[in-house]
Amino acid sequence: MKTKIFLLAAMLSICSLSGKAQFIVTDPTNFVQSIVNTANQVIQTSSTAANMLKNFQEVQKVYTQGKQYYDALKSVHDLVKDARKVQQTILLVGDISDIYVNSFQKMIADENFSVEELSAIALGYAKLLEESSAVLTELKTITSATGLSMSDAERMSVIDRIYNEVRQYKNLVQYYTNKNISVSYLRAKKKNDTDRIMALYGSPSERYW
Image (cartoon, rainbow, N blue to C red):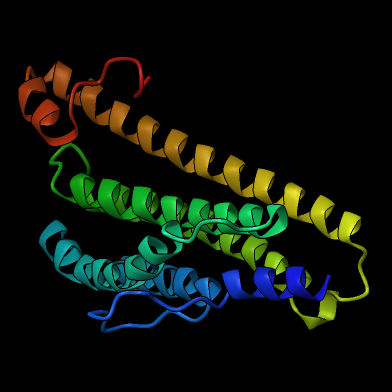
């Protein structure tokens, strides 16, 4: 049991395995919260699309630093069942951050969105990231010393629940992204300007509707 607890805790405190890494992430909850804080600063200080793009580079900087951690975590294999589920949960939070950063960067370059709309979209992303971070904090609690009173079965049950909640958040973030992109497609269609939007986001197919 002690070995399992150690492995679970290690998943929440693993450092980047790259020797070239300039930034060491010791807590993924701090990483997500840093993105949320920086995203909120972008919302509060951006008055034009150009200004928002410039400020958003700070979010990208935080994300790039933390991505080294997630890339390292993906390379960890041969874990016990409990630790594997913890790893997958943390990686889902990384996927949420990835969807936000890469999609919102394109939206800033999209003339179909006003600055006010971009701020509202960014706020929505920040809220979803914050919620997923809160769930990750709960995961950290049950894999630390404060969760020692739980049995293995109880701990695994909670880990499964948290994993499913974070997976739902990822699906919600993807849905939120797709619906916002679909608004741009509809506006572009009215202006007969779909080629530019398709070049930005790709073909709509069924994924944005």
